[in-house]
Image (tube, rainbow, N blue to C red):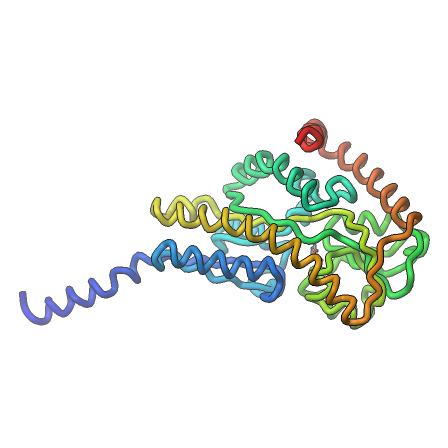
Length: 322
Ligand code: PCA
C-alpha cells in the first residue's frame, strides 16, 4: 500500500464514527429554563452518553424552530425527528388528546397519573396510526386563575380579556363570559405587556416563566387540571436507528418521564412561592368561585363525552376504575 492510500485509509477510519452519527432536531415550545425543557436537555445528554455519541439530539426550546401548534405536524412530516407537544392543543383533531384539559376530571398529581395510565394505550394507538411514537409524557403543575383584580366568583371574569392556550381554555372563557384570545406561551409576556390579554388559567411554572407578576396581582390556586406535554418521535426515524441506539432512546425517555413528574411537583411548590415573593396574592379560590368553575367543568365534560363518543366513555370508565 502506498503512503498516500495508507493516509487515505487512516482518514476514513478517523471519519468512521462521524459517518455513523445521526442528528435529530427536537422542537419544543417552552423557554430553556422551564422544567420540561431542562428535562429535555437532560434526556438529550443521556441519549448522547448511552449511544456513545451515535445519536445527537438538539433541543430547540421556546418555539424557536416551530410554533407550539406546528410541532406535531413537523414530527409527522419528518421536518423534525422528535418533538415536544402539549397534548390538549390537539383536542380538535381527536378529543382524547384533550382529556387532561377537562377541569376537575383529574385535578391532582395522583389522579393525573391515573388518567395518563388510562389514556396511554389510546394515545399510543392513535399516534402509531399517524407514524408517530409516544416516548414519554409529563404533567404541568395544576392550573389556577391569574387576574389583575380580585375574583370572588366566575361573574367577576365577565368581559375580561382571557389568554387561552388550547380549545378547552378558550371554551372556559366562553362559559364564564370572558373574551378568549389564544396566545401560546412563547408570546404570552408580550401579549400581556401590550394589553392584548389580562388574565389566564395556567400553572405557577408558566406564571414565573412569563413573569406574570409584573402585570397581574392575583393567583387563585384552583388546581383544576394538569395538562401534559408529550415527547413524540417520527417512527421512520426511530426505525432507522440501530437496535442499541433505539434502546438508549427508550431508556432515556422512561427516565425522563419519571424525573419529569417528580420535578413537576417541586416546581409547583417553588413557583407558587416565587409568585408570592414577587408580590402576588396566591390564594385558594372562594367557595363560590370553586363551585362556579366546577359547574364549568361539568358542562365541558358533558360536551367532551358527546364529541368523544364510546372511546371517551371507555377512557373515563377506565380512569375511574384505576
Ligand atoms: N403552561 C402552558 C400550558 C399549561 C401550563 O401550565 C401554557 O400556559 O401555555
